[in-house]
Length: 141
Image (cartoon, rainbow, N blue to C red; front, side, top):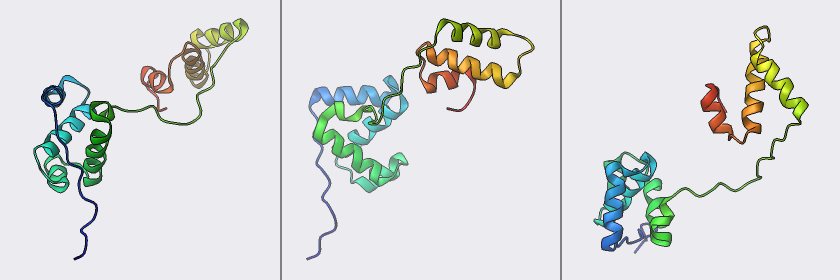
């Protein structure tokens, strides 16, 4: 008899996990984590990956991924892990550089592209992440 692919990982929840995931699914956490909680709850109820995917309007691979992560790492497996890669180099400005950038950022006759770039560099030097600075200044990362 031919195999139909890998067998879905069985998801069993403790009472505490069920309560926590239900709380998350009700919106007590960010939307991505709430969606993952709904996936795990549906899997624990015995629904197959394809049905969970269709009901929650996600890809079956997404269901498989979060089912497996929960089985391996429980609740902690549903949270985002830091992405691997090189760490962002720290941006350190001398006092002269900081003062020049501040002058450009505040001066009315400075070209707007230079004002924006000066503000970006100043905010990054203050420790803001690329995402935070982009959101604050209304630009793309």
